[in-house]
Image (cartoon, rainbow, N blue to C red; front, side, top):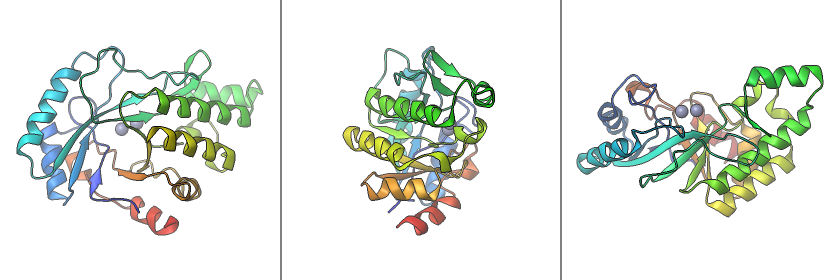
Length: 234
Ligand SMILES: [Zn+2]
Ligand SMILES: [Zn+2]
């Protein structure tokens, strides 16, 4: 079961979205959601987060639906270190994302990963092991309940394929989710993860949630891939 009445992944003009937070909340109500999560991008140097949380809580006070405050953060390296400010105001959840490849010494650009794979410096299996290990550790490193955002969206950018992900990889991610209370998102924008991975994770008891990754109010809570994914794996 995926609760399509909750959209946990949205961006506003606070970062790279086109509409202000208030419009995103109004769009969530108009789409018939019971819950909207506001989850703009942060990095360690972000200084506006306390103001952001205050604004979201203010909107929540008068909204006709539940409004939750999260942020989206990237995994930096193989230890699972997160690109988060040290001082965190109270957040409801964290979207944990693989925007760059979490390498042994820090983030690696997907094009660089592709080059290393092509040149034989890395092999696909070890690269996937590294990504899965880093992701599992990032779940454990999250100070608030984590959701894995657009899991495996990085793979095609690196010249890798989700079909190369093994059952052992998925079991390791499921174990990490179950140990940390982490959820896995079905991402509407990137249409990932794929059905086999979702099925595997859901059968292991991992909660699968819905995220539009909306950068415009009109895309909040609008589902196309999410119901297809659900029909296939439930
Ligand atoms: Zn993202
Ligand atoms: Zn996003």
